[in-house]
Amino acid sequence: MRIRATVAASLGALALTAIAVPAAQAADHSGVRGAASQATTFAAQATSQTAKATAFSAASASDDQLGDTAISNVVVNGGKDVVLGTTATKTITVTFTATDDSGIDTSTGYAVLYHGTDMDNSDAGAVPSQQVGDETNCKTTGATTATCTMTVTIDPRANLANYAAGSWKTWAIAGGTDGDYSQKENARTFSVKRYSKLTTNASPEPVTKGKTITVTGSLTRANWDTSKYMGYTKQPVKLQFKKKGAASYTTVKTVTSSSTGGLKTTVTAASDGYWRYSFAGTSTTPSVTSTSDFVDVR
Image (cartoon, rainbow, N blue to C red; front, side, top):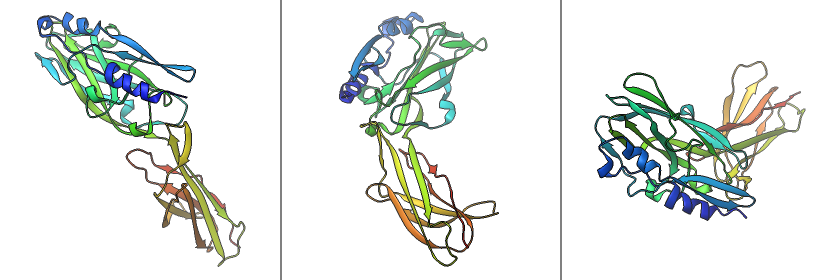
C-alpha cells in the first residue's frame, strides 16, 4: 500500500520549505548558493517505488528580496493545466525570467511546485530533476537577464492525492552576480487536475422516426487515492446532437450524472445524426467530450 500520508508529510515538513538567504550572507551571491547547498533528499517508500524530492533546510518560506533582482514571466506547463491520470507520470517545464542590473548568477535559479496555503504548510508538491546550484539551470540571455528552466516530473502515485487537485503555486528564487536576490513564494499559480473520461451510447440503431432513443454514458475521473477511475457524481453534462451533414453540434438537454457517474436520458428520433455527451469541467477536473455515436433514423 502506498504511503501517501508519509509522502505528503515529508513534502510539507521537508521538501517544500524555502531556501532562506541568511542576513549575514546577503553581501554576496554565495548566500543564495550557501543556503541551497544545504539541500538534502528524502525517500518515501510507496509499494515498490521510492518517491524522491529535494528538501531545503531553511527558516522562512515567505517572499524575500535584496537589491534589484527580479523574477517575472513565470510559465508552468506552457500555460496549460497539468492533467494526470492514475498511473502515468507527466513531465512539465517551468520557466521564468530573472533580471539584475549586474547580471544573473545562473547557479542560483530554482523553482518548486506545491499545493497548500504556503510553503511551510504545503501538503503535496514536486521538485525539478535539476540539482540546486546547477549552473545550467539558467541561461544568460543578455547583460542583465537570464532564462531559468526547470523540468519537473509528477507521479500521481507518489506526489498526489485527491485533496491536492486544484490550484497549485510556484516557488522561485534567483540571484544576481552582485549578491542581490529575489525569492517568491507564489510566483505563479496553475491548476493540477484529475483526468476525466466520458462515454456515449445511443440505441437502438437503426431506429424508426418518431420512436424513442435512449442515450447512456458514463463520466469518470482519476482517483489518485486508489489509482483507479471512479464515477464523477452529480455533475451537469450536456447531451448534444449534430444532424448528418451539419457542421456543428447543438445542445439538446443537460443530464446530471448519477451516484456512480452514470448518464441516461431519452430523446425522440427525428433525423440521422450524431449524439454525444460533453462535460464543461470543474476546478479539479478538466472538460471532456465523448466520442459521438451515430444513429440511423428510418
